[in-house]
Length: 155
Image 1 (cartoon, one colour):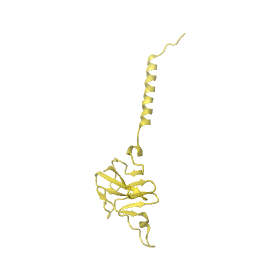
Image 2: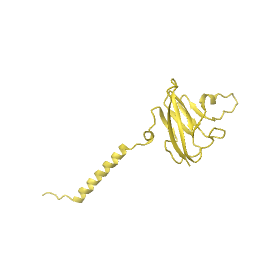
Image 3: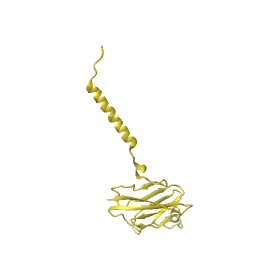
Image 4: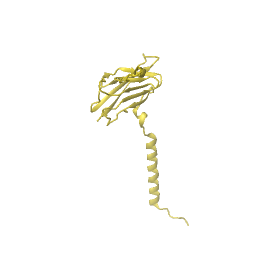
């Protein structure tokens, strides 16, 4: 004797399977992190991230470039002086290290870092929208300059 099929059970099962398929497809197609920022190949990481909100006003600005690249930062239309990390380390015995009043370029890591502080071109990031432009190029070819702008909001 054939067993009767419960229609409600079949409908619920189909809906559950459909829901799981939608969730799996959503996760597979979701774009987050570096991919969402649509960074050029020569830029590995940015801080604050593209479109970040709720950024504190003393946050550092950090760009991690691919090995073999160098660059400079422009924050809110102000070109920041770039200082080699080696220059900051060049301190006589007993002397105090100089504060980095510009963008620090670490050649070994190909990173650019700017920390707002007293005496620096930008002492603090005011509340609101800020735009940063990183101009970067291969160390061996300064004429191959590229740039990438991004924005973030300070609270």
